[in-house]
Length: 229
Image 1 (cartoon, rainbow, N blue to C red):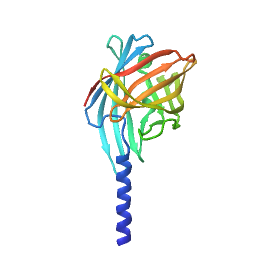
Image 2: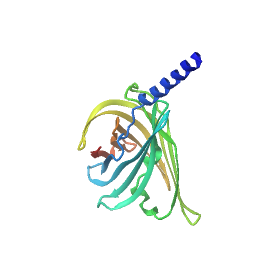
Image 3: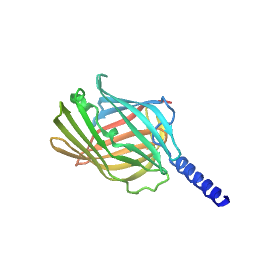
Image 4: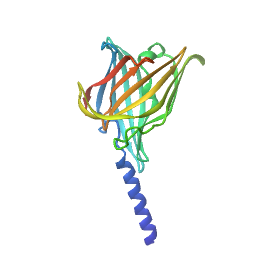
């Protein structure tokens, strides 16, 4: 009995450690709201996405965050809404690749059937070293109506790694961030390839992202412009 009790307590300690060791890159207070504003490479606003933490569920070895996103065009008109999940499990934070779906590009299909297959994307700990390689991400989207396929799109993130750690200031405040760089390919009618960098802050999420074409020219960026716990 003494041996069983010792092993049981050891297991509980390990589970508690794995949860506490995972620092989520999303707000932790249910009802928290935040906004990401999108800009062209020249700084012209092109739209925004509003987020809300709908729910947070904790089990012995996992925390699940349910997040709603609503995309708006540059005139403030709602164009697409989506719900996705993020997780703290086994000491790691992961979010759904569904987050990478551009609401503006889906506007034409909002009244159709949309089927998504999204992998989980790891966002590493602030304690991990610069240069650490990260897993790839894949998002497949199929759009149809009445059982007839209309469009398919695939988004792949590859060659992901920790680029840097730095402080970043946006209209929402100043944040200590982990910078992740990656290659991104989008295939629909044609294949488009670019590179991007993303800044993440613990218990906040993505603070800024930048996209570049093959020549290294900035083609667009997004940043956190509002945050309410």
